[in-house]
Image (cartoon, rainbow, N blue to C red; front, side):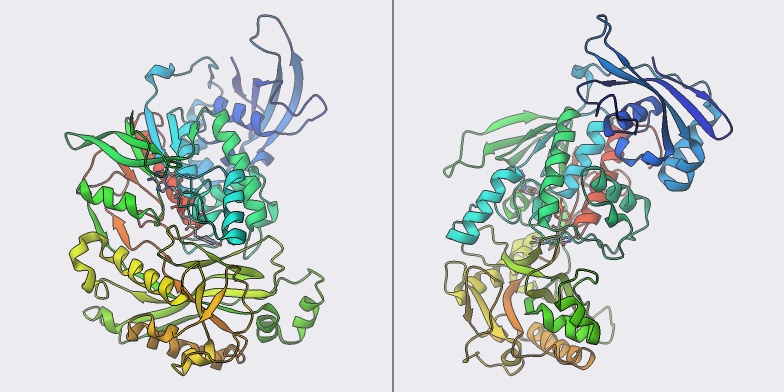
Length: 586
Ligand code: FAD
């Protein structure tokens, strides 16, 4: 088997690392390819190969071995490991090395030491958004038998379904801007910004994994990293191929409709074919654990959890409108003279963005209704406004962009916080009160728009004066049409007032923001989850149902691509530990 010996100071030498010839880049390639990295990770018993920094390894020897006794021809490598580089580059790895250090020189790796597949714990991961993908990656790499269940389509077909929506107004309820491979983050702006700390180990590991799956390396250094839909789609395809190579069973077009619960423990899931309108015969699948990574548009799944009395509670989130300006106007406001260079399209300077936060109230925790903040959210420079409804009677929007951010428009959500006080009219829905609050305003927006996914819109100047826009509306990037509407009447008056006051304050900081060319679109309701599913810190297991692991944005533990990915990754480690697949510290 492959082995490791202590080499010159600070180096280990790993030998007999085998990579099947069909996976290897070939005889002329002397670098560290992803399959070699996997072989190294196995030899080091390091859980996730994509987290190992390539730079720490140097190929010393590479030979071809086609002996008949082998199952298939392979390349056999000897690799030196620069331990110091590992220590410098990856704090997570540091812990790992520190644990191995006493055994240095005696590590022996047995390539045949595979867990027999009938002994592998079986884990279902429900949802292939960022959180579900990273949970599947970690669990798959650590040796669980993972089934990734996704109600929507793979990215290739999902792209066609989104095309049908944007061009022919056909909304597929299971394959759209929210549902399908990659989750809500695929046809998005792909901003990789987060409030959980850019340089934390978890975020760094996720970013490096994105690069390994084809993301541009500059996202690791860029102050405001951004992928764009055109980069996200191939990245997700590579992610899928890697999961399949690990043996993860990925099933698309399959919706989890119910949980199988016996004696307070989840034993499996009930699924149906999501393409069949009238429902397909249900099928029951057994699992040792179920990771629930369904995002916050899966309202049917929330209702199912409520039927099982899973502990959940409403949480604060934010609602509002999406504001769109000509990108050139935002460039002028933010860059002054430099804007001319951006307008010439030389690509040296990024198109301008903005970030706004305004707080109101006295900060009295007893009176949450008097404490509100208003902020811009998911700003998409050079992007477009898109429809994120999953049902034709509920209308909501968001923003996306392509990597070049070359459209004529700059859009951003402009939202005010709402909390349980606001959900009181919907109290009868229990922990789903916030969901019903969202639904109410999405229905109002659909009605105001007049149907057919036409979005209600209002000039920002008219919104401030509480009047219907009577002149022609400025152009919008939204492809399915806008209709002049009284958006000032859509939300409860206190929400509208906070939005209006904030806009007036922003105009003082960013003169020109209030412009006849600025158009508000309704409604932006799915900013973050309206509820949280209670789980134990550390184990990630539901507090009320054993074997259920609620993660990501839908469970109320993340907001955005990066934090959802990190949550999924850590849940993967925590669950692997409970399943005795992994013994390290997390
Ligand atoms: P999701 O990505 O929502 O994934 C959940 C998955 O579960 C979906 O694929 C869904 O089909 C599947 N699913 C749901 N129910 C079931 C079921 N019962 N059975 C089987 N499968 C099920 N964030 C950023 O950080 N940067 C951005 O630029 C950005 N732009 C965005 C633009 C748009 C248009 C949208 C909609 C969102 C954007 N976001 C952005 C938010 C980001 O997409 C989410 O925070 C993130 O995707 C949440 O990840 P998740 O894994 O928790 O859930």
